[in-house]
Length: 381
Image (cartoon, rainbow, N blue to C red; front, side, top):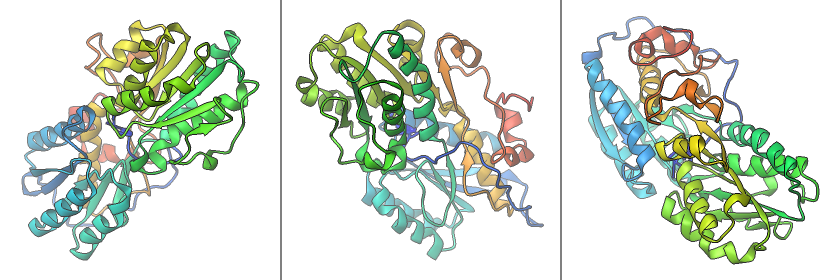
């Protein structure tokens, strides 16, 4: 999400969000809790390092973690990684000095992940990585790959109905290059799926689309780097928009809502207008409004960022109780359409009505009662 997420995501809506796995569910089950773990929330201490509080979606996640922890009586201290590798590494150093029961860390710069993880491992501080993996830490994340594929399942058939193909259509992929490979799975798999279903597109394998890819098959595919911000996406799109034939149709998909919204604004200003089909990732208020009202905005990947804090806290508490989590604990996610958005969000585009059911690799979170107390998860309440 990336779920700013950018989940990360982005997951921008996090480069969402900044990292992701290949699947949103799993069959791994956590180890049983060790005996003797504290159950008194007032005795727990948590350090939370935000991805970057200057970015809306990241701040939303951080607020959720801190607010819910405070309600539970947990002592929590907040840090801001500021989308910066050296800052994240410095924060990890500060955190380990305080010896919290667990550190929750959302690092967005893959290049420092190993060093951040070494800080926690060396100082024997249990850690939980959000969105972007940190070696040695448990992992909570969405699946950017699944979101890209799910978006294509809705958008590409509409393009087919309109007669769009490789001779008259360009797929624009908006990534956050610094956030690593996994966060950008959504745009990459979106292109791969579109190229398979629409005639005349150059077909490539997912691993052939890297952070350095700029074009595929001439103007079949164009990839830009949003640098995890709405303004960055707008400027990056402005820089390349002259290379797209003015009569072409556009399929647009970004790694998060900010990246998508910025590029979309540029394309509309350039006159592509109703010849753009798109969808977002992150379910920010602006993106949900677009899904409800903009005929070009067909899908929106809901990562329920407002509720991530409850899930993250549940996993953090589980770890303090001696649980060994599965390799990935999945975040709640669903691809919304114009027909389903009302099921999950109120008309204010902010308030969540319902969260999707737990899946195999996050079912264990229900044990601690936090989800039941602070979230409306289908099947739990």
